[in-house]
Amino acid sequence: MDCCECDCSEEKKEEICCPEINPKKWDKKAFVWKNKTFIKGDVLQIMHIPLNFGQVITSLVSKAEKAKALPKGEYAISLSRERSPWKSELYLATTKKVSDAKNAVISGKFLSRAFDGPYNSIPAFMKEMENYLKEKGKSAETLYFYYAYCPKCSKKYSHNYIIIIAKVG
Image (cartoon, rainbow, N blue to C red; front, side, top):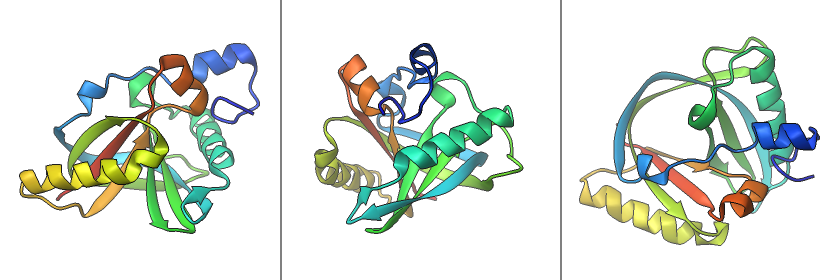
């Protein structure tokens, strides 16, 4: 399966698949989230390689849609937070709490950077992010990764945007 690894029809894939983002809205930005709502799921990994990402994101999107809690367009973000080489957490932004899901709230001060490149460049992107945080006199309490496009949309838009979001306070 392609495009978000769901089994939806071709018309719906184009409709629901990754909205185009403007990376300038994320690059070198500071922002505050107050009680931003998400639902979350666990992704199994083997040495940082996700095994069930497609199943988890499909399940989260389905729950958010059923509850009429899925944000539109560029606000429909999902964040990944790696817990170990064996597990990561996937957070899907929602407009409200969802009754049949694990709800999470993220609050704090954040700095973000936008990168464009292959997934194997993530260590270099993380080093750039670390240098950016040092320039700002900050350190990351938590790092979140926003993979803006699924593989199909990455090809469609000719970009593979990876936004690193650091909680700094």
